[in-house]
Amino acid sequence: MPDDRLIVAMDVPNVIMGMDLAEKLGDSVSFYKIGLGMLTGGGLALANELKQEFGKRIFLDMKFFDIGATVEAAVRGVAQYDLDFLTVHGDPHVVRAAREGAGGSDMKILAVTILTSLDRADLDASCIKPGDIADLVQERAGIALSNGADGVIASPQEAALIRALPEAEGKLIVTPGVRPAGAALGDQKRVMTPADAIANGADHVVVGRPIWQAQNPAAVARDIIAEMNSAKSIH
Ligand code: C5P
Image (cartoon, rainbow, N blue to C red):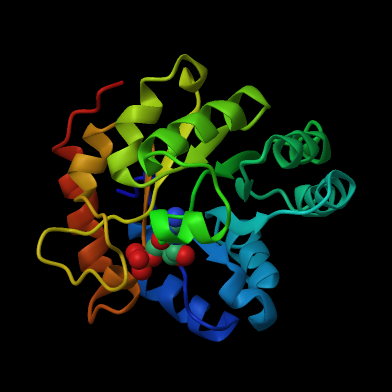
């Protein structure tokens, strides 16, 4: 039984490998994330095919950031494709422009707060104001949500903090950085299990390598879904 709380990050380089993965996963997965790594490998075409031919939900992870007029035009272009989620950076002018570009479409605009790969030294190097990353993430999430984002991307550790914000009422929290117990971490530093991410207030978890690098991706996906079913959410 597919469970759309699991989003599989299709971080393979091209459409052929993407279709191969989708075939292996079959009915066990109903939601895919396609990102910048596949931009030149036919990512948008694959997104369309999975949506139109196979009825899958699609999260296009583009993390747009630019002047408002350009973000608005880019989002208006993407909105024609009937996709489900699109990411932009959480800066207020970007989120407002994305909202405008999305118009009346059903596509959800998700805001990136602070990339989970960045630490305080990285933020210092980019002249980002002092303070704990968790506090800054919470503040940026509140700003993005009050400027019209439908939800935010956050590490599972940050999910509960964001869920506690009044601005997060009825909004989506989508968490990468999720690892089934015993899986390799890769470059993810702050991870939680799928069950803990859901218990901390996530609506969807994004899992990449533990699934697409597995010998039997469908079995891993089914285990993750079973694990999420055992969790009780805080909301
Ligand atoms: O392979 P893994 O499960 O680590 O993949 C996680 C996916 O989520 C990747 O596509 C990565 O780009 C994305 N992501 C992330 N952390 C963020 C935002 C996106 O890991 N803060």
